[in-house]
Length: 177
Image (cartoon, rainbow, N blue to C red; front, side, top):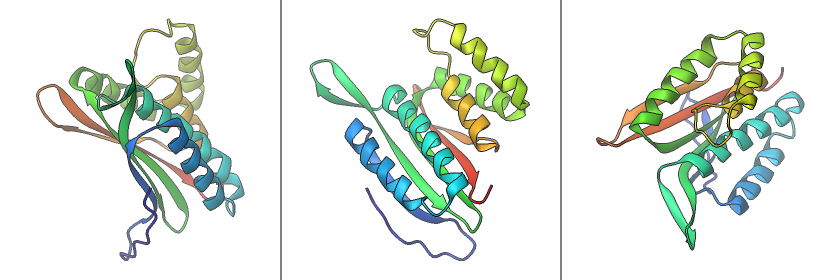
């Protein structure tokens, strides 16, 4: 975990950054740091922590870049960061995805950003009824992220090779709302 000060005028300040395997122990330690850091922002504190859990679990479970634990168990590798501006906190993750998943994620994130809150709630109910063993891309966790933050997802997909893309997703929380 890196904690550093970044003082470029007008740019968001990086408060925390991590790149590596998303072990449960790492997620737990970083989660405690996020709770400590966001303590002054009562309304943003719980929102940001919930968003952190959702996005971190996505990297741990779905990143195509895997770390071998033992036997046939693996955990996802990716990157996360927490940035701050004067009025917002932004949590982002970045991880490798298959080209097929990248297309699904792109379309689903666009849909989530264009949907009204009630439509998102209905989509979430529909996703809960579907077979949990099937990967649909941007399922309940990302739907919940948009509902929690009251802000759209910011996302990008960068081609890496003929099989993989780098998926970056960020969600912003207003510190004082």
